[in-house]
Length: 216
Image (cartoon, rainbow, N blue to C red):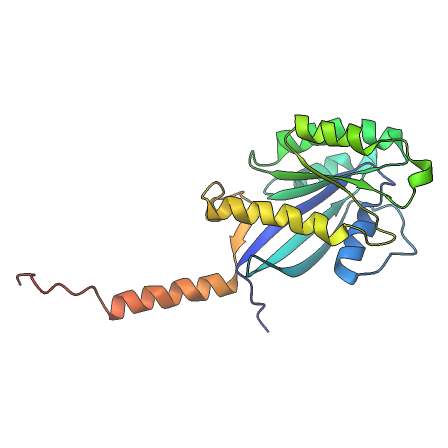
């Protein structure tokens, strides 16, 4: 059975190992915490259809391994991505310090219009916080990123992170800044849009514009 959606967006979830990337993805798709989470080996995949601005959009999400030994594999997935969640752990200064390197990789390897949202995960570990909201917010502003804190454990802001990134991508599509027909944009027309284009094309060919003053 064909899925009905207007657009497909390719998403990445990137960041250091142990930041909870897989748990964020799992909570977004399954709406529950992943109890038996282990380090991702290479890349994991998930997808979900969401409603944004009255349109059905399918998010095709690639969860990349954060360990250094898998970087040569995961870097190939940056190409052709429309959006990325860049994740760090608010209770780990080390994971936050690595954010700038992850951002540099994304900017160098993905398309220049990649939409990036910085996510401070593990918001539930407030007592162990090592990175302040203000510090991360300033970094996001300086690098033209969106930013929020979330918790894969409680679900706080998990859906909002994906939706906010997707809304920005859709807005860029609607303003013409992003072109779904351009190779490597990370955006594709879905079955719903394709069928609509086909109907419009058929209608135009069956009913050509009238021209009362035309000479034959």
